Amino acid sequence: MHTWIWILILIVVALASAAAGFYGARKYMENYLKKNPPINEDQLRAMMLQMGQKPSQRKLHQMMNAMQQNANKK
Image 1 (cartoon, rainbow, N blue to C red):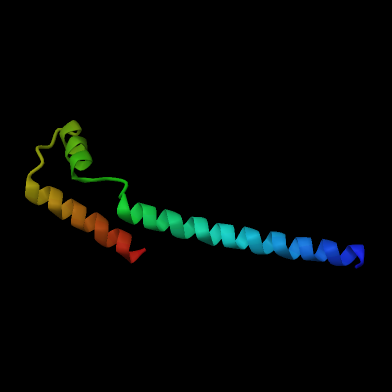
Image 2 (image 1 turned 180 degrees about the vertical axis):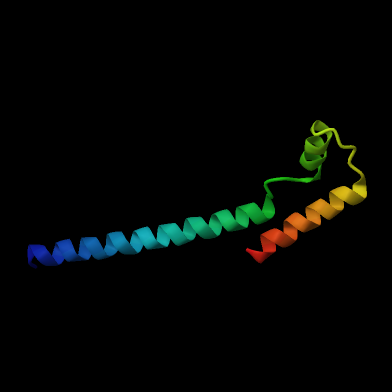
């Protein structure tokens, strides 16, 4: 087989591997972030206390729901 055919095959395999790796990593991170959201109610409560607000359970639920709806839109 000619050398240029081997080089062409290597380039095609490298591009296919890069594309598969990118989409695989992207899918993995999306699933990871769905299962482990970057912020939870305890963290939100701590942030509100640091800002000098006394968080009620109702307000925490409203903020969490708003964040989830915003995440679902994207």
